Length: 552
Image 1 (cartoon, rainbow, N blue to C red):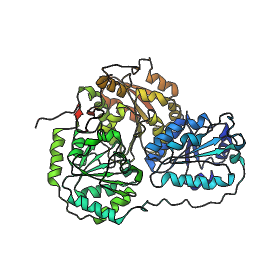
Image 2: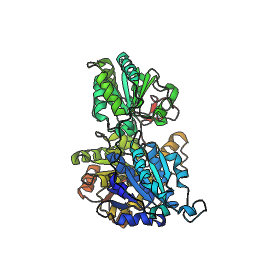
Image 3: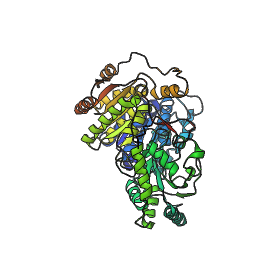
Image 4: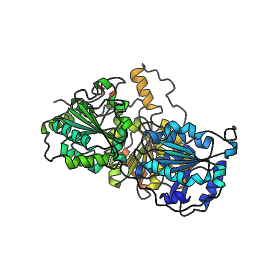
């Protein structure tokens, strides 16, 4: 507990159990100094810690007991790992004398989580506990952030050790491998480009580099597109911003990537959902990649030059080296013409979803400085496409792992991190049923979270693929159980509301937020609404289906 306070922790999420009773006894003595939020399930605790971390940039902390308590954290840790979110998980385990004997609720959690954590520990000597925890926090937030697990056998929790306060080790921006010659080569590549395009990812958000990025875009006179994780790093209304790129990106972004002569990749990892057919991705461009993690270089796409280091520091140094006055008017005019030619429009197959999202967007703009979390599926993509993202760390979603059930826990962590702000969780009926038990947590703490459940009575994204690529074989994707989300919400002590297909979404959403308490809104949408445009698996990203072309 003293180390947690030393590291600036005042809020933790968890679930008690037999092998963490000593830890919870120590937590009992910290009332008023460290707040503990017991979730309905350990997975909810891990997602809440992750949401807290993503929305604040601080380390999120969760606690679980041994065995099933610890394994219930695994999906949350993998989610944080894929999206580079700093989380420290503390688990209990059986006493050291019982390790390896198939003891009650014993599991090798360090072995289980090795592939999905940045680092993990089992503390076998009480004298190592304090420094191990300090190191865990430093690893979680330094370099490319990520989750760290510390497993503490029960006997180590009960032994006495001396504690002496120590100032937390500062996290310095990593420049250890940043070479001046690479920066000079990057400046040369930029000076030679006539059609520069930036592709940004979550690394820009994690590095708090939005300001430096905007200066870089101005200095290089570049257009810019974003991965799912990079949304909010550039204002959606910027004339340089072309929108989301990849499978469900805009036609403009996907065309621009394949028309540019230099693609500057900033804090992004060339996900398969972005590049699709690798042999045709950015086929006319030289590629300059800026990233803190050298493991990302030449992993999925070969770059012409890569610069390794903290993204904010790289951009800051490049901005100091770049001359003012770059002029790419012809290129930006091409972008403007094709923005008009391929607007972000929808067919009738997703019009209702857009109406709801646009109504939410206006309500959030009225409220100001609100946060959005999502589950995973069609609703997530509609939120990415149709919300006007304008601030980093305000759109919180599971990108790399695509974790259904993430948003509810993440909304809890986000709301508790920002108690004077409003939080909306956008869900699908398939995703929401996975962790809807966290309504108990939301109700207990009267968190004024508004949850919009896009209810199409099916697993919408899977059904979309079954429609388009599997001849309409709707195998096990129809959710035709008589589940009433309003009644379920009421049973938990949360207000439920209905939005029928003919209801005005703006009126219903405004009413939900005006209640200033937890609300679940059951939003009925057609079963075959689709996320469009879309790139078919294996196709080039500029070969899209379902886009709307304006007559020129």
